[in-house]
Amino acid sequence: MTKLPDISMFNLPVDFLDLLLDAVCVVEPDGRLVFVSAASEQVFGYRPDEMVGHLIFDFVHPDDLAYTRGTAEHVMNAGSISQVENRYIRKDGAIAHIMWTARWLPGEKLRVGVARDITQRRRNEAAQVALYAISEASHTAKDLKSLHAELHGIVNTLDIPNYHDQVSQSDADKAHWQLIATQVSEAISRREMLDRLKYVAQYDPLTGLPNRELLSDRIRTSLSRARRQQTSFALLFIDLNGFKRVNDSLGHAAGDQLLQRVAHRLSQSVRESDTAARLGGDEFVILAERINERRSAQDVANKLHTAFRKPFLIDGAELLITPSIGVAVFPFDGEDEFTLLKHADNAMYVAKGLRQE
Image 1 (cartoon, one colour):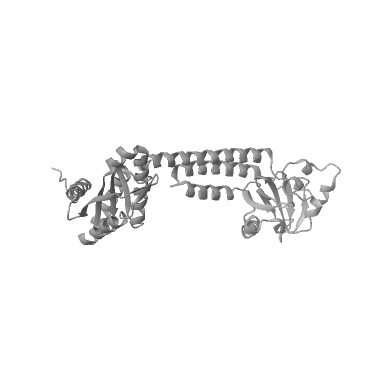
Image 2 (cartoon, one colour):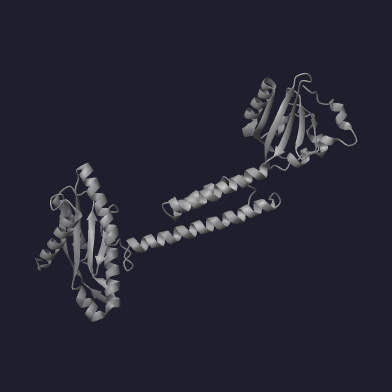
């Protein structure tokens, strides 16, 4: 094995080691530094004279200390290591990612290591991972609130100087933050657009109640659950008596206001687990979950009748509107969505006194 020059030779007027961009460190078995090249200031933030005489472990990131001690033992046992990474705390408090190549000199009982600063490389990689994670979150987050939480977590784990820390940021860091900010903005805009499209597709624009499509989806879910758990649920089909007269006498604007007030009253009259939906016109449906018997479904209908006893105030006029309600209970009145709705619709017409053929 070729021996390295004696440490005293490093005091030559022109030290070739000081020309290297990577820092060269010579360490005793216990970790005490006996020589550090000039590049240490660029890599670690400390001048050589500020490091020599100290234990190299004093500069290691606390989370990497045990690993670094183990690596030092490995060098002395195996003779060398190549491209091993750990983190150091620079003089300014910033974290430096270091890649090491080291050899053990048994004759001199010294470890000689070459330290390369790969901090920017790791930041570049972290930024790329973050950009991918942001894009993925914009597609998979279930709603805007969960997306905000995911984005917050992604940005907080970035190992890049804080966005407002202009001193510690390189030009590459600033470019990363700009790109990340753009990606976050696009992710939020995309989620907001998807949420708007989803809302338009599933909710009635006039009343804000679930529309026929969303009601159908919830009925199918209730059917699946009721079959699996051997429980019941009810559909209540509601039609407003005299609604046409309101439109004809007070105008369509008043009719729309009435539908909005009816929707609000229906929503306030059912349980949170139930669904009040508008099919169209003056037709509404209540999906009442976990109904144990037909009498319980009729209790829901009676509660709705009671809710309509109070007049609706429309443009200064009090309108007393009554509902006709038809009830269908799974599985007694049908075992699929179409049959149940048809039965409730027919029962509503019976209640109205206009039996449908």
